[in-house]
Image (tube, rainbow over all chains, first blue to last red; front, side, top):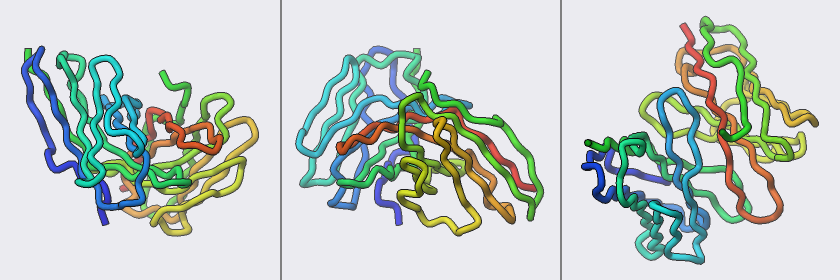
Length: 112
Length: 114
């Protein structure tokens, strides 16, 4: 049973524009959410996280928004750069449980 | 660079064989988790070790087992390999101190079972 869903398998965006990646979850016990970026032949790299007590967290070009009532989070990348081309995974964990549940990933391609 | 390393990078085995994958956690991290990532999917949680004890397990059969050592290294053992075990195996380490902690991943071991 997939508790974290990324419904868009791919996203193509022009360099300099905004990339918006979406993630939905079904488990109301999730209280910590993370985004990871993965290049081919490498492991996932932590990008940004958000706790359920917040609705927004910003780190440089990356902002994560959390809508708990809709069980939805999104990652905004502004401005998008060619080096952002990668697979992005949304992940979540429950209170007191450190196991991560991942979505299937969204492949982002940034066009010059 | 996360400080988490894995070996080997690639491995080919035949059905029925056994395999041991290794991970060296980031120094000071007391928790290691293992994940299986099949092609086109997100990583799936196998199990987690905290201070050398199994601390949680996903929906994987007992032929998947692990060990964690005091020197921050760990192993994932898979017995009686099946074709569906072909995947990227990732380990992740973190420092658990009572709050949510971020897991840092190694580059993975790609296992092919023929």
